[in-house]
Amino acid sequence: MAVSSLTSSGTPMTAQITIVGLGPGSLGSVNTATLQAIEKITTRFVRTTRHPTAHLVAQAVSFDDEYERHETFEAVYTAIAKRLADEAHKHGEILYAVPGSPLVLEQTVQHLLNDKTVEITLVPAMSFLDIAWNELQIDPVDASVRLVDGHRFADLAAGERGPLLVAQCHAQWVLSNIKLANESALGDEPVVILHHLGLEDQRVIHTTWENFDREIEPDHLTTLYIPQLAEPIAGEMARLHVLSRRLREQCPWDREQTHDSLVRYLLEETYEVVDAINALDVDDPSTDEALIDELGDLLYQVEFHATIAEQQGRFSIADVARSIHDKLVRRHPHIFTNTDAESTEDVLVTWESIKQKERAGKTAKSVFAGVAAAAPSLMYASKLQKRAAEHGFDWPNSDGAYDKIAEELAELRQAVREELDPQKSRMELGDVLFSVVNLSRHLGIDAEVALRLAAEKFKTRFEDVVKLAEQRNLDLSTSSLEQLDALWNEIKKNEMLK
Image (cartoon, rainbow, N blue to C red; front, top):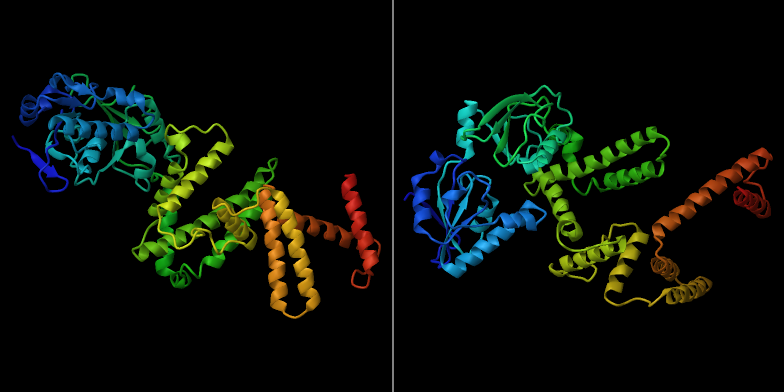
């Protein structure tokens, strides 16, 4: 029997799994080596009975129930691999049969190959790919065909125009997601639907991008071939990445920049995004333009930093996207696992719990590791206090925070009166501000937001004071404090009457 043995650790193991492929669907596509393995090994499992040749594995246990038990395919594949490993340890040797070929779009097999507790024997088999190339009359190597999983079409085909062979197109929602991934498609791009390849009811349908999701009811034996698209998938992001690399290579200014030199621009663009958000008007769509523009500037800063790192051989924009993707999945167990979260409060508690576990898994030099020292001072103070509170160092309620402000104000007044050390007065003032931030945290008010609102209120009132003084021919620079205070109170009173 022609087989290929792969051992995870290189040492003999008693738990053995022989994996065979049941071919693309027809009886004639199942090879002799597969049939011999089925005959030899009596403890048998099949991934699914929803395959035309699954009946060849007599008295086999299927994992069709796992598809009903889990919400994601990844969870299904992980569960199947675990059950197989357990059965292998229980019986010593088992057979596992999969549709097609063991190494083509079989995530359960990949999980098993990574399991160091079992020994894997792979029996080569024909896959649907062999029939696809024959029906399409193309050499996939010469044509540089990219193979893509339909479930992950948007990210796996990013930047690609084709040719693409898209597998796992088993449901209408998969076809819809594929279509939505290329919003810039013209609609007349050719698409070939390959359905039930090698079976008596095989269909090869030549259609267009506009119509491919209307031609047929897809199932697990449906594949798409996309020769060429007018615009690449997720083309705009791909174009930005190409542009960023070109500017870095050819523009003298871009070439000289470092992570450190770009910090000021990153901060500036962030603040400009905030300004654009604050200027949004739900009744005026034209205000979106400013936000689009500023978000683009901020996005380019992210791309710029990733491009610098990519040229240094450290990481790429794909690593950045993957990192935040995985973090968000990890911190939303109520979406991706069986964890319950009925309210926003539940979500926040879970989020903080996961963050603490993540920090515990890292070697930290300080309890404040991960708190951004470059953050604005009010935010920095609040983060430090919050982290200390997680370790039990906090007032039980806001009463202590109120008292602390009074205490710090008294110490500040004393330091200023003594006029001995300017540094001491500066530190005491800092203690007052730090205490105010602590109170804001206990009250559930963001100190940064509160101070900004106060600053904006002051700005608006003083602008009105200037206008009122001009109307009355008053020179602010020569006006007395009493006159200025009267103008201020008049403006304040008018605000209250509105």
